[in-house]
Length: 310
Ligand code: SAM
Image 1 (cartoon, rainbow, N blue to C red):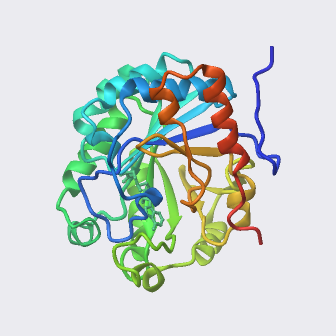
Image 2: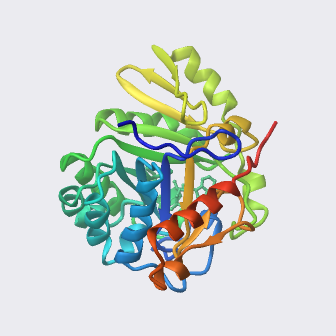
């Protein structure tokens, strides 16, 4: 029997769910969009997250990504992964800053985590401290290497590129990734009203088009990922770089197959909007039926609108 696929009104299938487990974080990155949310009251419990994932599975979601804030500062992170894993998804991943990965990578792998994306914008301790306001670079690097060691695969490094801050470090970061069998993802800085410094994102925004041109010139092979916002992958000397450009990118929206859930249990139809959330946690706490919860999910999907259209 073929798996169910629910599509939104723009014919985009909903295949993955990104759950923000908390808005709390152990660093304070200068550019952080806080996944569009700030408050962190009433975080969902592992059982509530499990219920949301069960409903997601019913409507055909194949992949779960856990994010934050910093998801690894939840002390129940291993339990959460283990519960989600028992439902049977194709892929469970976490986006983390890696600082606590040395402690958790092995347990997370055993609990059923498939892979991690680790945010690391620089290999320079001073730049790291400038960006995150903390001196955890060594901890983050140890965590990254631990996740490779325990077999989380692939480990991807998310590097947000900022003018005059780390744009010159792409080559070093690429070599760090290549040497450790990891994929580098270059991310274009999103201008966000949630940034701590309003002017920051405009001042440091660095268009990745030029970088892509250089990569095209030197790559042994270039591939476009059909269902990943038309992202390009560049293969260079046995290493791999992906480029993620959410800014003014209609393809980013046209190919979006992802629904989001906030830490306090609301369905968030779009990363870039906060005004169309759909409450599901109240009904979960009221022990509503799976049919009713599915209806709420479908309502969230119905509210999906492309943010960038041209
Ligand atoms: N704490 C985790 C981490 O550091 O990966 C997960 C949360 S963080 C908000 C998720 C991702 O969003 C990170 O890769 C981060 O670099 C990216 N991000 C945050 N603000 C951004 C912005 N203004 N532009 C582009 N990417 C951003």
